[in-house]
Length: 103
Image (cartoon, rainbow, N blue to C red):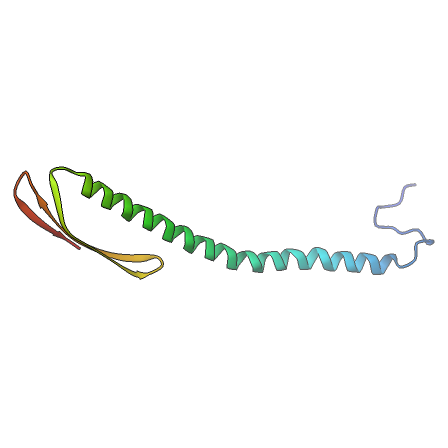
């Protein structure tokens, strides 16, 4: 008859202590990793949001300035915090000779 994997040989001393330490490590490592990952994930999410917003606004500005039918008269970008910004600009449409203010 074979013994289960968790049965110890009587000649192995300290087996119960070994198992208790191993179980403590198995329980504590995921808890520690979960707590550390929560902080890291929120920081990464905030950084990626800022990165996306910066790139989006830069691409939008490049598009406006490269359009030959539009003359950008003012461009004001104010950062509210790391995840939001306020853009105000005024442009002159050369084709229709109209000025547009956007907020």
